[in-house]
Length: 65
Image (cartoon, rainbow, N blue to C red):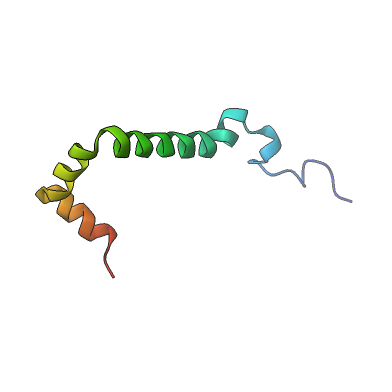
């Protein structure tokens, strides 16, 4: 027969702290808020970044085909 300990995984979601479970939601909301604020109030900074050498390298890295 199987015992209860044989069926339990070490990383069972029941035993993970709550903050680790909602971390993807927190990071998604933080990223959405940051992107909204940058597009609303930091558009000049984004244009300067895109026209710089580093910005062009980042742009080409993410848009490789």
